Length: 227
Ligand SMILES: NC(=O)c1ccc[n+]([C@@H]2O[C@H](COP(=O)([O-])OP(=O)(O)OC[C@H]3O[C@@H](n4cnc5c(N)ncnc54)[C@H](OP(=O)(O)O)[C@@H]3O)[C@@H](O)[C@H]2O)c1
Image 1 (cartoon, rainbow, N blue to C red):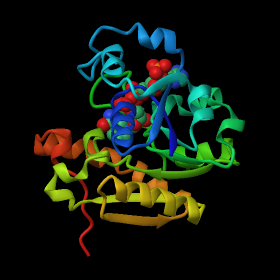
Image 2 (cartoon, rainbow, N blue to C red; image 1 turned 30 degrees about the vertical axis):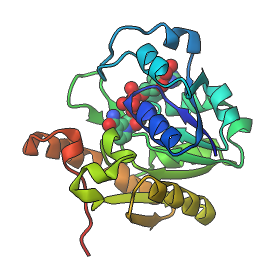
Image 3 (tube, rainbow, N blue to C red; image 1 turned 180 degrees about the vertical axis):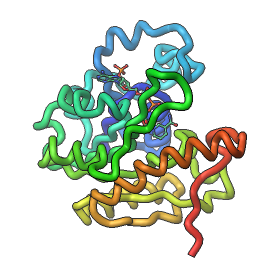
Image 4 (tube, rainbow, N blue to C red; image 1 turned 90 degrees about the vertical axis):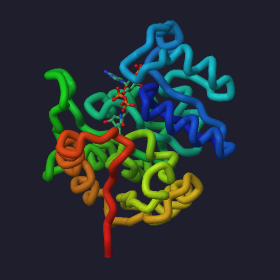
């Protein structure tokens, strides 16, 4: 499948590489590809995006609009605070009728670490995206874990942990669940309509507290729902 991954951070790179290894044709979206290609200094993820791109010659880089146009499915892996502008740059026509897999969280890093979580019980980012782009089929998933687990759940507890999905379109959710299974996910909980993404976005303060309390690497703990 042709997939757009909007976002050049650790999440965009990880998902792009994971989906490419499964045989998908991935294009990563960024604000300005010429600027992004010139980023040769290691960033906060340890690797310069220019280096990462040279190591992944089979992954394309384009503007948000070029990538969204390429994708039959679009992943939103942009900064949560900038997701609406980034998706606006992608262009409503390029999102129309497509599954928009939203993995973003509303985190404000401007005051240092840990980031301030701006999630709200009144309305999730995913719902705001759906309202802004009503012809897209928004499915929230994967936002409750570190990037490294998203495409490789088996590195922790043999993959015996939980991923949630929320969305208003049952067929879109079924496609996303299938994609997740292809990445190795077994415990996939469909929470229901997109409004249930309020809950998963509000898990972030707990996820951040656990990181401090447990003193573990981000990929070394995760949520598991025991029935
Ligand atoms: N890091 C994790 O382990 C993790 C886990 C779960 C969920 N998430 C969520 O996943 C998303 C991506 O996280 P990340 O850490 O990979 O990267 P990030 O630093 O949160 O976001 C990077 C992306 O956001 C774009 N961006 C930033 N400001 C923008 C603006 N003003 N207008 C348009 N686009 C803008 C950047 O565009 P350029 O390419 O042009 O620079 C880049 O593609 C976030 O929403 C994050 O909360 C992260």
